[in-house]
Length: 213
Ligand SMILES: NC(=O)c1ccc[n+]([C@@H]2O[C@H](COP(=O)([O-])OP(=O)(O)OC[C@H]3O[C@@H](n4cnc5c(N)ncnc54)[C@H](OP(=O)(O)O)[C@@H]3O)[C@@H](O)[C@H]2O)c1
Image: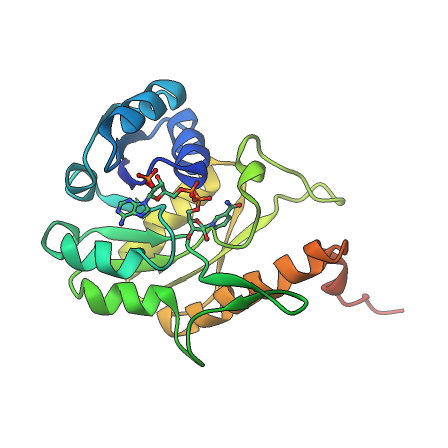
């Protein structure tokens, strides 16, 4: 798959690198094109350039920018993003009592704001739940199963592309409903980060139900 990455920071490097290692053609687009070139060289990307070039590069586009910048960036490049799978990995968080707080309003999601800003784009919420360091290598769970990446999508083709991107990195795709449920994924990230900051482990709160006795 051809994937344009908008941004040159930690998530651009981690996901862009994981997808390049999985055999995808990655193009890094940054407002600092020298930084984009350096990152492209580091992760073995197929090319680099501006955010506009990344928006128009491939079947999929990753928005790896701060949540506060993502809707405006999507609006600016709405024409190029139309018809493409746009992956939103952002979390709109600020430090608050007991961890971090969402900056979005009740029921609102960054993914929804991006979709409203670029109405022709097929927005998928994904990759926002775990720390950036986990994309260096395929992780394992205690029982040896591939850990899951939940994602929310309205468009079936876009959902299929994101499932392919997830599988290629050794994770397991977990469909989590339409984009109207993206707010739940964003709130889940806020909850999980609060638990991590307090020294806890969010996964311990979600054990499987026991089988029959
Ligand atoms: N870090 C994590 O563990 C993690 C995990 C899950 C999700 N996320 C989410 O992923 C997103 C990216 O996080 P990150 O850790 O990669 O952040 P980061 O390292 O700070 O990188 C942010 C990137 O966005 C670019 N950028 C900022 N405003 C822009 C604009 N208006 N137009 C174009 N590019 C712009 C920056 O460019 P400049 O260098 O030019 O400023 C930089 O390349 C965030 O929404 C974050 O919440 C992060």
